[in-house]
View (spheres, rainbow, N blue to C red):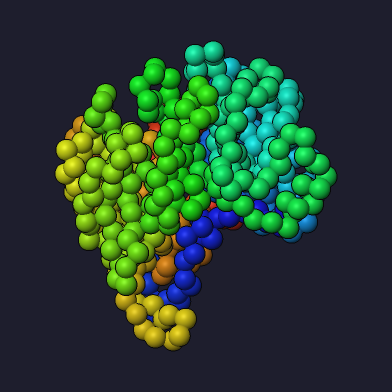
Length: 448
């Protein structure tokens, strides 16, 4: 569809910089890791996740392009792969007409739940047979959420147009809906054909990333905390969908945010860019009641930041900026891990400037690597290597020591958070990485 396909780069509006000197290549991932398999699945986004069950994996695809220029793109939908070999078992939810791009998928009781860019939300069995299908008020860009409410299980999904909806997982019937004040999408009873034509030529962007799931109002039911595309925070009651509170933060609020702490001490933590003439950032802390508790200035030198957060445990989390990783504990102590790789660039106006090989966007992998000293390492994906924009690179970082243990380049730039798991079921940890080249790669990780 013409309007869709907001990517990580498009989301943050990165400037294009050209390398002005030859960079020293980062060792390739093949120099340390054995390739187990690779599979052609099309493009994935930073909202893409991977579902594992038995000897299969399922992953959503944006097909050949994030920006579908026509109504036909057969490569998008949901791919089912053999996790041992990477062989495609089937591709489904990829009808011939329409924008069938899929990002996040939720698995619940042998059913798959996902939305697409064709203004639909689907429930299928594990073989791809559609159990039910709902028309939606706009595109769905992220993984659905599961809540246990007072009346039973509920599947939650949100649209770019500004609606959050809870449905029964068995039949898709609506339990509740919440609409933002500026909502301009489709509602039941509206003319669907007129809406579809209008949607083709319009852009919306209220709900774009998955919410935090936490009991905000202490009623025993988890609630939802969303960061809207414009940077606002809002909390919705998980039982009723009613608005609990909202915070206006504009674009300064980072996309990567999470919950830190235990019990009544739980708080929301995010990296925030300040709207000033110089680059200034802070780590901001908010109560679950939506009140700003405090902020701590940090020394990040560049705009943009991380696209997800990593919870070490309830008392410690990690946030990324472009060139640093921040370890934050429940007392507000912040430890900076410098990941910067300085490099000279030629800017758009031909001026030689100091920059970094690190791209503007960094993502944590899902999972950690155990180290031989009983410590653990996290993996950070840099979307691309600015010294060679055809590739991206991974950084393996010791959590406790803050040391960078390794840097490995990958064949293509990419933005899906890598997955660390025993993918091929041989007892050893593997790394699953998806590139802009349309392939999903499975590597066996070395021991560190």
